[in-house]
Image 1 (cartoon, helix red, strand yellow):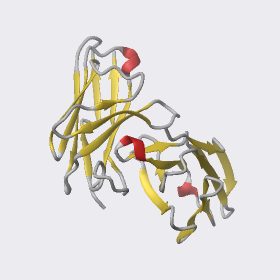
Image 2 (cartoon, each protein chain N blue to C red):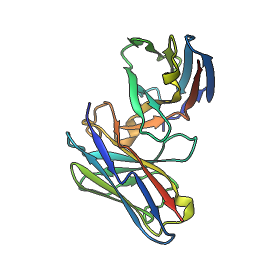
Image 3 (cartoon, rainbow over the protein chains, first blue to last red):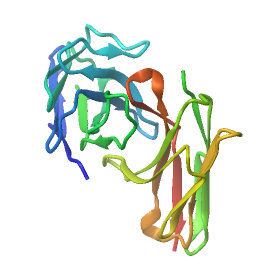
Length: 119
Length: 113
């Protein structure tokens, strides 16, 4: 199947700093990528939809100025958690698929996830 | 928008028994329903999926059934093994979100040897 790679897997930062997480599609082009947050023992909650060459679409309740998303190319989307606080500590996962965002339905592949701990 | 409900939240079975997880969805236009397995600290992995033009699909010990009229779909795992222990998520394709999947809350399956 298609491969989505996410980096870093683990990150620990001090409160007030910013953290960037990368999501790459390794063997396909993704016009759309999705960013999720997962708290312990909970489901995947969509944060935003990242669109190549245009602004991201954020879900209700997600602060766009805090969670900056950039989809600079067809294989890379980045999520930057700005001015991180302990409550931002979570497992962040991206997903993408060869057909996502192109009006077709198909499998989504997930990155490895990034566990963020804000001290 | 789409809403997906999943039951039960936890399920414990003996090795060799069958496990069934059920999901309902709200958007009658949804037409793609994957199931993901997530082990602790790892990424979700697709285990089986079904499209709305099919009522049932099997892959070895795993099967999924879809009832479009009732808007529910189920995951069936037969001859469960300890390595089946994980959290399972159902999802439905949401047309209104550029191809995004809406996930159920998950079912923690424990298979006891």
